[in-house]
Image 1 (cartoon, rainbow, N blue to C red):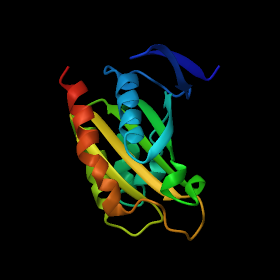
Image 2 (image 1 turned 90 degrees about the vertical axis):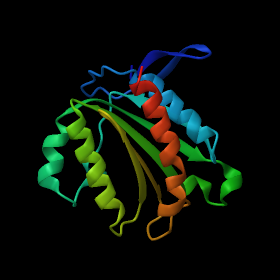
Image 3 (image 1 turned 120 degrees about the vertical axis):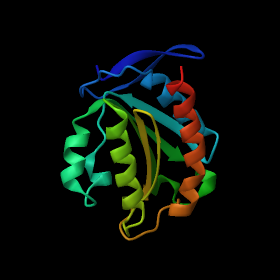
Length: 177
């Protein structure tokens, strides 16, 4: 319960299942596994993938909530990837989190709206940092922050951008198939 089987390079494997509506037409499970590998090749260790989740409105709210709400109803399926910072990267590595949300939308306009909202949100002061990518109907949002109130996260708005091009490549490679 709460898990499903997906095909990995090493054979069948388990990922989490979040019980939200999940009707993707693209292989979001494979995209999520590729994104998890992207994090593992960087400064993060163990990554967990959960299918059938949501793109929480919190991360993009307070920019144009009237536009955000209807766009989120156009999500065909969403996945979340969480990864842990490796201990050698920071003395308080357990206090830092990175999450990647991947969503397939009903149309490119909806995905484009989410991307535009993310760009506007990035420019505003907040207690987390974010990077986003869009390819056709696919939208991806990486978010990083510290669990400790008032403490800066391991990632900065500038450092997190190192993932943008690689995330876009992952999306592009699958979107063109």
